[in-house]
Length: 110
Image (cartoon, rainbow, N blue to C red; front, side, top):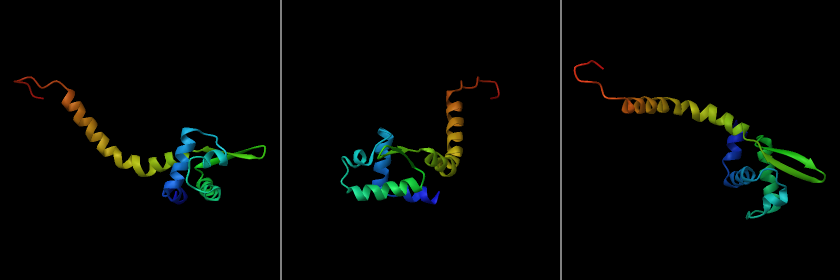
């Protein structure tokens, strides 16, 4: 988890992940397009993303193709986000149910 948090802490790495999410299976040259970073900087960021298992690579001939791996982010979400939202979501659901139910009739106990 520490590697995932470290990888996601940097805006440049998040931009690379966004690019791979939008169009999976890109080479280094494709990933460098439109970024204000040197090829070497992109390579360093990709190495860190690979170490965090957020990017998987596959060699196609002499080219290394990069793919987004959402599993670590999903695990992070389940571990650190979902459990904190559950009580709030339960409360909102109870409120919604109560507001949408018909009002009790007069003379009858609810």
